[in-house]
Image 1: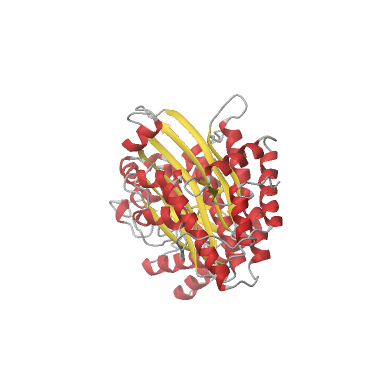
Image 2: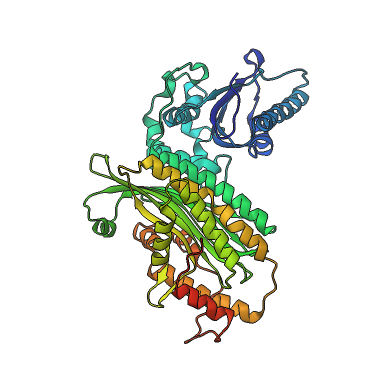
Length: 493
């Protein structure tokens, strides 16, 4: 029997004992899905599902340890059996045991499984058109409401390129010959494409980071907003506001694709090109001016010719710190964490990408840095020294280091006292942050030029900002010391 292991994908299916009916009516199915929400959803991500009168199918991603997820399934089946038996004056087991499960070992198999699950009602002659069936997840993919599959909806749609192709593939694909219930295919697992691998990674990283930040804040939680881009793709925006620690912040992921706009074709020096871009971008604006603002971004880009061949691909990203009051030990901690991540892949990376960060996050019109830097890297392409897999491993190493770099600083400073004057200084410095994002930042430019979602692009802007005419800090003050460091970067590590 296949073990349900964390971070793996599975086809879970089962039927009534002796093929008995397990769902007499829509009320039974509705109740079963409520129990799925209660018992199963906290332990797995549901990718697709379908309920028929004597059996069901689920495609899931396991997000908990084996023992925990097994108990969740047990609780689900026991709760439903108990209610069903009471309703129908019966006793004993209802479902076959153990329930069936099969490892999904490549994304093409997953894609075919999604098609099979959604078309199951039609294949079993329950309905003439699977698209009309109420108890599969197909309609959920077309809806903007929050549903059982919302968590992984952008990822699944990306498997089909976009929502239109998702619908077209469902309509044209003949899944009647695919017997997923008794599939003993012994083919070797296929290697996922780089874009699919990285897109899956940023989904997981978003979950990890938002959970860690909610723990730090202790009050506010992230509100999720799933959106679609008309030209192709979409994303999952998560925003936290008015918390104990974070006044405003966002941790967003996106995966967009389609024809590269003319303005961007000129920028890249290409003609008639298509593209795919995905990434995670975050900005956190704390309430207490003693806690620094932090920004991070990890992204991947592909460009295609007319035949759909990849003609260019690269990684980019980094993380940087913007304090309002400078604590040397915090700066050293942040930079040392960045250096440790870099050193695992190349001892020259930290020095190189720290310098690029100081150069990039620089308000030239103010002659000062936006903050005290960190790492910035872009156009990381395959070379004799670094394959795309090597770059993937480096970028994910940096991504995985983010919470270690920032959380200890936030924890240490979040309860320090501050004055109104210090809060005013924070808001004045936030104005410099806004200036950089709107005047210099390439990510903001790319999002606006590719018809990205405005709310997600501009979530980096702080809620309260001041622009004070010709403001200069008092001589010898901590505020003046910060400006001196921003004008003359320090090698903190």
